[in-house]
Image (tube, rainbow, N blue to C red; front, side, top):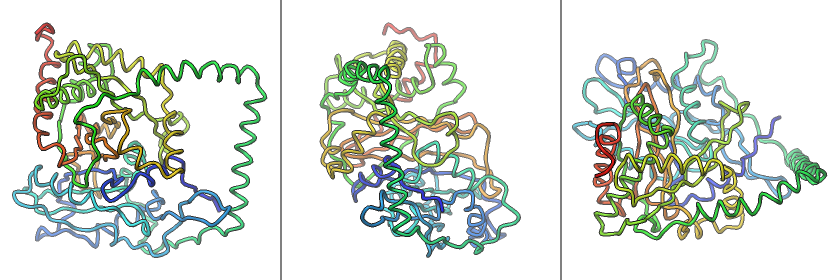
Length: 458
């Protein structure tokens, strides 16, 4: 039997969670409900649940729970839930009238907050009624220990979009028992022995040791330059309530603008984030002259052979945002250069070692609620280039949903879908009643940035 242990990143995502820090990612999808509704406009929930259950063989982790083995048996592992029932995970919700985006976002905020029970597989899915024009929404809630953004995109497509297998019927799956204690102890010993052997091989290569030792000073200099966030009103311990807001852009136009400034799509996103944060702090009476914020940018650490694999394979780099620069065009050039510098100087998986230490020492919550290394977090996930379906229903819109942790009261998550780039702002609802100021500035800066006629000297 394959022993599927949680990775260090998985365990970190579990350790950071608390009642005021739900570690959930997910999405809000709006679909044409014709294939999901009966003649009276009611959801065919029996058929919907059965269709999803038939696809679970493609994403077996959605049937698994976290199992903590005994002494000497090693890290926690994923095992089949013997009491798995699809109706505990796929449910119905109703949106308040008039059923527009505002009402859907408020419903999503409420559903995403309660912490998932670890006695069950760590996901929930709601089909939402009450939308006009025969549309149906879906709210997907997935614990970050199960997958990172890229893996979640792959999992959702396998679960919802790909053709239904013809040879699988609901109820045919049977849970496998967890491995015995002796098997886990043996696996733990093998794993630790392999780690010792890898270390010994590295130490046996004098040239590799010299390179590693020589890179330490340069690495620390890069960390010192990048990590170290200025004190602003953005960084205070978060509370339990969330507020989601959305900015939508044409993906082709973003790519064209990014290339015109010698950068990438994510550099444009970071520029809009910087403009929004600048406007927010100015409106609060805080000085932005010479202010450079630090944004933690998620970076995939998957190798070419690991593409499409489930789980968490993400690290991070820190990019400096020059809030003192007023014009979006001038700021874009600085951010593109900063991104290139950060990628060349920083190791994307380096901070994970520190986070694992905090998780294992029990210091995670205390540190994250008082850290001054970064100001905000940002991620850009490549979604689906072509339209997808949900059990045969065309998906009309996708809004990604991210999380907050510690004293990071704002996060930005971008997802591309069928030619559109959607940026979701996740905010602590109590810390950011002025969130519309940030959104308005992001949209205004995009208008300026996308127009090459507007001069930079303003």
